[in-house]
Structure formats: structure tokens, C-alpha cells
Length: 142
Image (cartoon, rainbow, N blue to C red; front, top):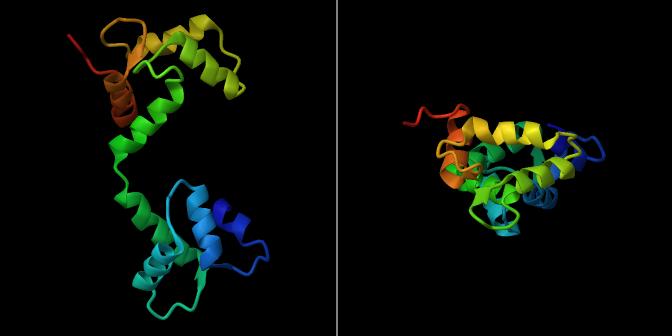
């Protein structure tokens, strides 16, 4: 709702199709004007160019449902893997913590890694990261 309200600057309860396109791009969806028009008109054939919050919710729910969860998780992994090594190291995690303004010491950061580090190499691999994000708890690896 907050994102919608930011673009509804005049507090009319509606945004234009152009504002919807900009909002969707801000939320990470690569859409063009024609796609936005089609999305809205598929859900509301009588729409005349204004989108209220309920229609916005429908459009966004459909778009989020189309996303591949594993692909989205791998995009998130890349945000941590600054050196493109294919693993999240203590150095990577320290950098992310610093960027987020978190004051965690190396012991705390390493404990986070160790909790999910199934192969005990001191880093988080892509597979381990997928497990964390999909299940949220460490797998019981042999």
C-alpha cells in the first residue's frame, strides 16, 4: 500500500497507467507501456486509464505469481556475493552488514555462516543459500 500511496501524490485513490509503469519498474518489474495497458485491460476491460488500489493489488499479485522463486533467490545471492566467487564469505557478509548499517562483529557474522554451512568450508554456497531461503532452517546433511 505504501508504494501505491507514494505514486498517488494527489491522494485521489487512483494512479495513471504511466504512474503504474514507473511504480512497477521501481518494484523490479521490467515492463513497458504496452504491457501495462494490456495487464490492466485484461483485468478491467472498461478501464479508462486510472488504476485504484484494488486493481493495483490484482495486477501486482499476478506479476509476482509469474516470477520464478529460485531465480529471485539467486538474484538475492548475487547481492551478497560481491566478488562473484559463487560463495558468500565472511568478507562478503561483513560488507553487506556494513552497507545495511548493522554493527555485527566477525564472530557473530561467522556464526551466521556456520549455522547453514553444510559442507563446513566456512562459506555459504549457492545451494546452501537456496536452502536457507526456501526452507529457513539448515538441512540435516550427513
